[in-house]
Image (cartoon, rainbow, N blue to C red; front, top):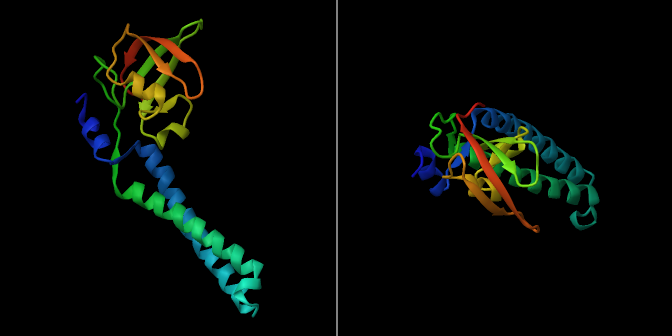
Amino acid sequence: MNNKFEKDRRQGIHMMTSFTKEVMERRLVSLQQDLMRRRLEMGAAIEKGDEYHDNFAYEEASRQVDLTSRMLSDVKQKLNDVVIIEPRQDVDTIAIGNGVIVRFTGETEDETFILLGPDDATQKLGWISYESPLGQTLLGKRSGDQVEYQVPKGKPQSITIRKVLPGSF
């Protein structure tokens, strides 16, 4: 195993940065408030006295309660089983928590990525998931390696790993 996170990712633990955890905690509070509001809307629709099967407001409020409840459950589960990713200082091989400078074949400029958890990938530009095709390809590689990875619904991409960096996030 390349680092302590490799074991955690195999066990289904939700790995994320403290930044993403804070974002998700705010999302949790927002969803809890939204669920309460939607339940009140559902109650108000029932009070109108219409039959349940003819009450569009009730049906819509009920659908929104179900949707919000599922999203809330998902966020709670991720926050319950979270392992915080710390910046990785070892630069021998690429692992979760490292930065990496790569050059795509045919390009003239390098690109920099930081390899993090799936929920981190949507938080900041340059943060990618270790579960993404590129992230999976980069794990365990070293500076100077040339690798190919398959882009979903596209041609294989060739890249050169220019440098493995310590994590900075």
